Length: 399
Image (cartoon, rainbow, N blue to C red; front, side, top):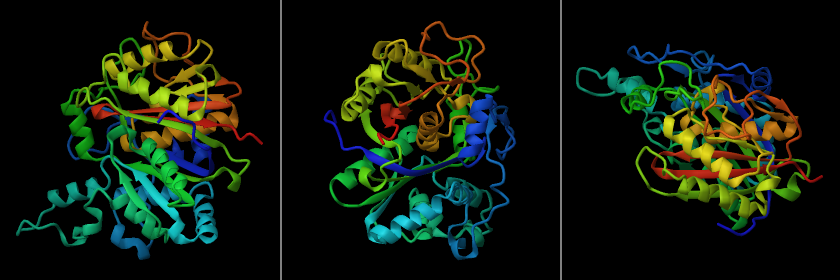
């Protein structure tokens, strides 16, 4: 996509991560430059690494009416939906537009696979799942979106997008298309991914997990820290919420260079960022802040830092926030979109936590410490396995 789109209002948003529940917890930690990574205390077998774990998920079962959807991923989704007055805003949209005119588009990389893992660990003598986990609805990649639609009584288009780490960024693009085509009047977008053995041991098998807290863009970085998060946003046409921040544009690409390694010249990432600028009608010099994908893997950070220097003037600020939360995989897009929106709302450029010795490839764009400054336009990068890339452009309300 290279032509400008009509901006959409982000009329409400919320995010929860290892930093805490709701936007205030995220903002306090970003301002104080305090991360929430901790030694791994989650996996079913020992694995020496650090994780970003959300407190309180185990103590927050779903309401009895939603018991059929019970699993850790949906618990975190429900906890996050209850923050920042978000449920009330969605219910107001449902009443205003009608349940069939509010779409649900959610991204996840693992959905509720943690429940399926538990089921296989607890197979009965006949090789069947234990009775309490014989619930088909949670053993599917669509569990998250189906749960949210059912819990909020939304009847519009309901889609799950699973494109690895770009999943909950790409939902914004899909929502814009649905609204532009007149298939919906509002869209609930977002994503949730919770910790599970599949991702912890899977990424460890790829030799991508650091035994210490991750250090994005540090010269001596040695891998990622895996986290979990949930976040949601309500998108409407601009006239419905004239004072809300805007989704100005987006870019998507898939370079298919390698299953787990980015293109060495950042081809797909560059295409996504350039398309986001084009669809927003923005010159690079107008971007105040870029929330980088910055996972602390060797190649990803190198490629993204070089790309930043090629595309933006020195005055554009940039940082990775994964040193605070860990890499939240399918929820990274929505969590870091929320960080970009917080940067605009509160005039805060988050510091690049964890980098003690910056990689020489990093230029003057990097905010190594948090900075108080006006942010009118912010980009958020999300680059997934297989070269599946997304970039979102957000801006302050023009009114």
